Length: 68
Image: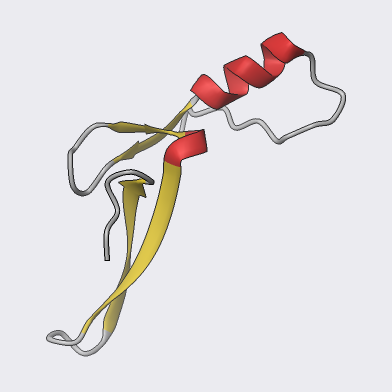
């Protein structure tokens, strides 16, 4: 995540700061639709590939794009 500024939720933030934090991009693309994901919509899913020795990979989705 080089070059991506992450902000942590803070109870003392102003409404403008909270709105800016929800619009911030995570720097990752959705595995299903290929679009950039906002921090608020980011869902990382760990997948295990059984074909290549049980290798685990982390895949990013929008919350709306992820289905089981």
